[in-house]
Image (tube, rainbow, N blue to C red):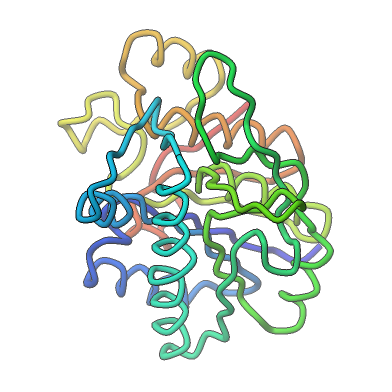
Length: 257
C-alpha cells in the first residue's frame, strides 16, 4: 500500500507568514502522497472581534452561532485556504483547496445540545475516502479547511484536529497513513512554559492522568482524542510535533494506544 502523509497545521504557524511559508516549503518536500488540513482559529477570532462578535470557547472548541459560522467560513475556507493553495502552487505543488462540503467529501451532523449548545458545530459522520483517493491519485494535493456540511444545505464548523483524524481514517483503506499534528510547540509538554519538557510517548492512560492533573488542557484535548480514535480505526502512526520538525522522524510526541 502506498504511503500517505497527512499534515495538520494550526496555531501560530498559520497566522505568521514567515512560519507558514517555511512549513509549506517543508511540506512541499515530503515524498509521496500527502494531504494538508489547516485551522485558522486565531484569524477568525480577530475578525470576529473587529465585527463585534463575541468568541466563546469550551475545551478548545468554538461555540458557533449563525454569525460566527459566517466568520469561520470566510476565514477558514476563504482567505486562509486559498492563501495556502497559492503558496503551494508557487512551490510546484498541485494543491487544490477545499472544505468538507466540496464534492461531499465530509458529511457531518449538528452536535446535539447536551449541557452545552455548541451551535453550528459539526460532528463527522462520513469521509468519502474513495473520492479523496481519486483526487490524490490524479496528482492533486488536497488542502482541506475545517468546514463541513450536513447534506441538507447547512454548513458546520468542525474542529480542525477532528477533521485531520477523520480524513486520516477515511483514506486509511487506500493508503498507509501517517498523521502528523504540527503546531508551534515541539510536542506535548509536561510543562507548558518549558519547551524541553516534551512527553515522548502518550497512551490513553497517560492522557487520562495528565488531563485530570491539568497538564493537558484546551485544544490539546480534542487533538489527542482524535489521535487515539485514528489509531483505533487503521491509521498507521500519529505524531504531534513542531512544524519546523516535519522532516525529523524522531521529533515530537508519539501517540500510542
